[in-house]
Length: 429
Ligand SMILES: [Zn+2]
Ligand SMILES: [Zn+2]
Image (cartoon, rainbow, N blue to C red; front, top):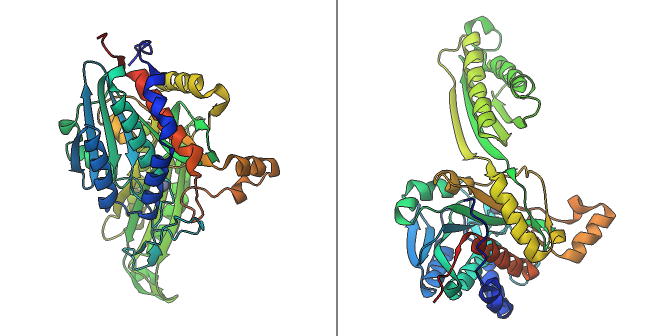
């Protein structure tokens, strides 16, 4: 999309009801926060969203990719804009002391008892998206085009966006011209963080099972020792970033787990490695993943193992690449609305997000920004004291506690302003 901002949309008219929405936004947020649901189990959240969107006049598609919801508002000719929020919570026991703190409990697949908490702020995302849908729906006489809102499951697994696409999302809803969205972050509420280009790292988990031939520790000649093989594999993996990735590109290869054996005088049958990869570029990512596989197979062959290693890649998040041109345009619109001092460039974020899949699957650009959520006074004090890392809990912390206001209002306003910039003005009556 390269058309200039539509000059004819009365943005003020669309945003006018925002001032009276504080209580509604607050109630929705508190309700969602107190009722967190794990990935692919977002039944209550999805039902709430579907009901709200239907009431606003959206055509609602529920159960897309499991618990995903998509709402479509066709409102005359013009571009199609997709706004996205994710819905899932985490197996974290909340320790915020908030009056609306979650008391939900679960037993994870590993059998561990845990609380369930919106520790990544996806409740903020859902609330802000429903608020934006409300304003854009009520203000539809001001604009022309198609609005698609997507409430995605299982972002924390890196699977929800892919599941919706694979379940025919773009057969059910119009293909958008652009994907827009936001993630709440531990910076001062009222701020927005916009970064063009690679914005969120891609991450992959690679499990490697190296199969040797076990035996007595006194008779190595009768075995293929997977411990030595694992050691040489771990060391050789270190050469990927240092020897195969260009100096100007970034990647991380971390072997976070290494398990083999039960006793010092037994050579075990196998060794297992858990490898985590971070990258900001699809080409670099592909190269690193291919190198891991090549090295694992090569080292196993060099050791003379009875069978090749088993290599599985899971929990894959591609990097989020904000389209540089479209991001500059949205940054300009947000800066004009909020003031340039409230729109910062946070640089690339080492965290990961699967929202980019919604854009790449449609072959369209994405602009995805950070939404400040922390109490501005507390944040300023931490910055002045140089204690942000200690005092401001990050996403996924049991103490992650965005302030509802002005976080929610800022999130709603940013979505509305960014969306209206992409839609067409209503045809004159
Ligand atoms: Zn998260
Ligand atoms: Zn998140």
